Image (cartoon, rainbow, N blue to C red; front, side, top):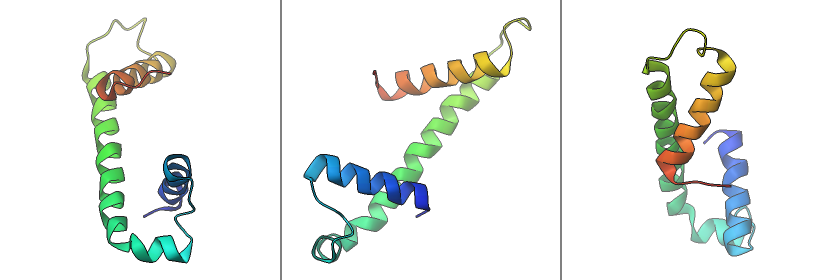
Length: 86
């Protein structure tokens, strides 16, 4: 699990359960979940990459095709794919 995923895991545990997942009592009790959580994070990342690949493969007019619009479209695609709204 890379450092960014570890930071997000810790943030999620604090927000969801108000506990520090690095607390030895918590870590021991949930060690088996760590591998599953790492795989879950990788699957989410792969889904996000797939959303961006869909945006890249879409035909768009040349005047609209730039990094800024592509990035914006990727954000929209990911939000729609996961049903996330802020």
